[in-house]
View 1 (cartoon, rainbow, N blue to C red):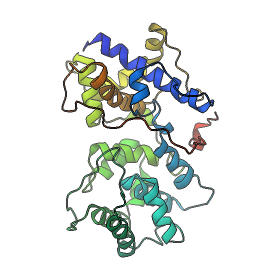
View 2 (cartoon, one colour; view 1 turned 135 degrees about the vertical axis):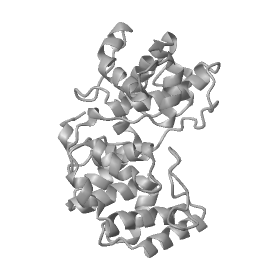
View 3 (cartoon, rainbow, N blue to C red; view 1 turned 90 degrees about the horizontal axis):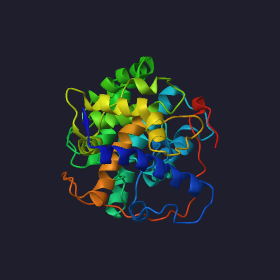
Length: 313
């Protein structure tokens, strides 16, 4: 493979500088947390996916909220949350039912609540990534097809029994992506989130999938990848992170003693693509602008991590 060295080095710079911003904010330092004008102005995901606001909400409110759930209910809760990927949608459903479990799941009642929200011009989907919107189950509205998908998964196919038997992340990925409305990228995100819980314990770094944004970042970072797959490039970044940070004299501060994982290295390529739209606009892709400007959130995140990671910060 042939690197575009300047952009390859920028990958490591971005990962480190975005992580430095995370630590400075966590430590209560005042903005700006970086001298980088692009990072000051625009919104970028964290270097560690798990530190992003929606992932933290998933951990704190959906998975580790202090209540005990069966493995089947936990899987259902995770998939329901992630199909919409929006905190306010979860809270809307939660406020209308005693709890969110398979027992309280009623396709028609859930649909009614979400339809009312849409009628009131309330967004029910997070636009961080676009979920598939075809009429796979015959409904005109996307949320009705997603609810029908959940109904088929759990009430018809008993997907919980299949997923819980999986020995690897890839095995579960293949089950999920066999369903309508779930492509490769979504299936990879879902298995990552399922693995945050204690209902499974898959090895994180034996499997990865390059999403659309990641593919754009890889293309900007490498002039020619030869016969190496995009996933192998992500794995290369994972395997060489310590030596590259050292080579560039970058002090990357981990969370706990956890290096960047495959999912993180995949995500950083996506963020690199965004960053380059401003820093290196001559590197053309089908996206030319960064859509979201950075707007500080008023609510502070109390960071938690999957219990099996043994991380405290």
